[in-house]
Length: 158
Image (cartoon, rainbow, N blue to C red):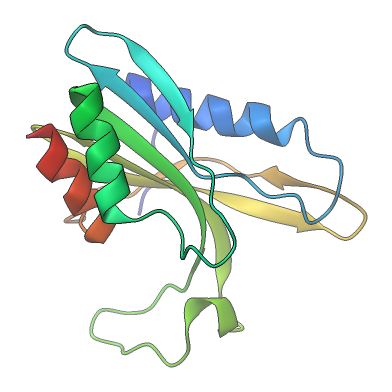
């Protein structure tokens, strides 16, 4: 991972949207809702907050693919909060990230278009008696971006 400034409009918009949402927080345990930013073939951009109901298990690949297909998306960014544990290549996970004492809490930005898939993240900084804040954006350069949700996004956009 490297610290970089991005020239990707949707990634910048996703970061700005996340910071704007965070500015409204009042409690230490406030959290960012998952959201999707979509640009369609008519160059219209929409921000869609994805509501998650208890026990639903998060955003599903099928729902994400359906939203992007219906929108006729040409590019999109999915933003979700997540626990991440950084390991060396080939090192197996010991615990689930949410249970690992070496975890980091991040907002993860998954961008895809017909030609590109990119990941980025912003650290979530928790404070004992104040709302959470965000660190600086990191673009995950040189990685083969993939996963169930990003693959569903690619399928809907290509």
